[in-house]
Length: 115
Image 1 (spheres, one colour):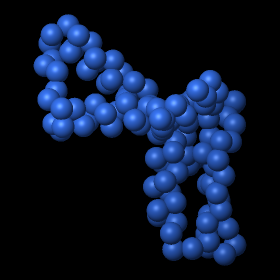
Image 2 (cartoon, one colour):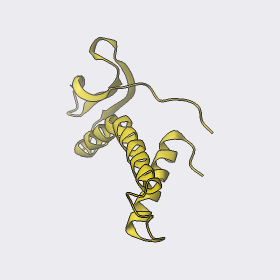
Image 3 (cartoon, helix red, strand yellow):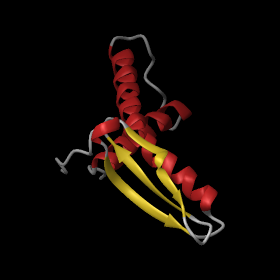
Image 4 (cartoon, one colour):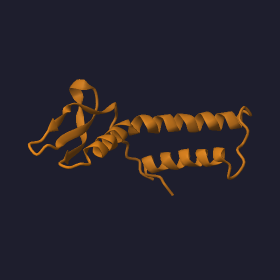
């Protein structure tokens, strides 16, 4: 099991951390921390037509800690609902059961505990 924790948030993209390069590309950072205490988590330089895709990827990476927290909360909410009888146990193979499996797998992947 990986006990290493990710850099505390909030994570962000954009703002003063995006620069245009001389070749028409851009350079950006994904940062973590409060405004005056930010650290760079990821840097990328782009000089090509994939700039839109790279920006979309950067936004997704910056949102990752928030999504991980939301998935953990959803997993707990569903588990509590099933345990307390407010939610019926999903039938094996049903879309509901698959969704719960996807949530659990995504959390394990993010935490480095994927089997």
